[in-house]
Image 1: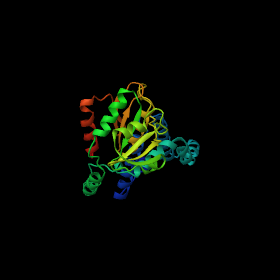
Image 2: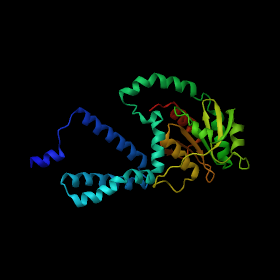
Image 3: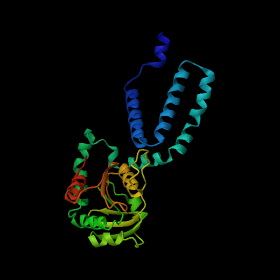
Image 4: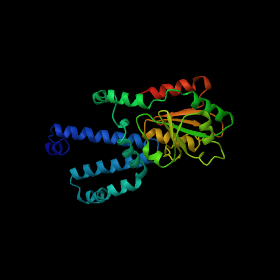
Length: 270
């Protein structure tokens, strides 16, 4: 009996405790990335196989252990192939402040510098954006507008058509005009400037995504899943205006509360 206890509950020190904690944090963040996608079932399957291998090895079951060991040997290659999209999103997430739990003491040390960044990047006048969205809504002109906060989205800006223009209602309407060469893709706004148009964004892979939403909504959720940006979507089918933050969509906003919701989300640091 003591032998089995030694196998499954070996003596450990504080380094082992830190090791377990870091692995738990890593697995939790990986689960959040794949939650709601087909990859979550695969992730659970891999974890089950790994713990089964540990259990079999603990009981010294050589035949079954060797079979499961073959899966473990090629596990890294399998993970890279199967989780290509999720690993890319995870690595992108590591480069943003969203990876840091803001409720932790570490975030309080960074709070001052983040506030300075927000002050330099915050849009002060939302009326041109709001006016453009509702004009496009009336004509059912589809649009996807991304407003950056702490994440600069340089990769996606570089992949689009650089504009570097002031934000005006007419500029946004001209970009998303149906016959304009720039109307496909997203516009990215940082501070008081429209930096780029026709930007290609990653789309969400959530299984339970409303069928009433199109590719613009999927791209809006996709970019807000991997960054702290705020996305504004104008539906080409219905003319409805939605806002996406942290991978969630707030659909069909009325003119009376759209600007208030947008300002609140842009000023939020949580």
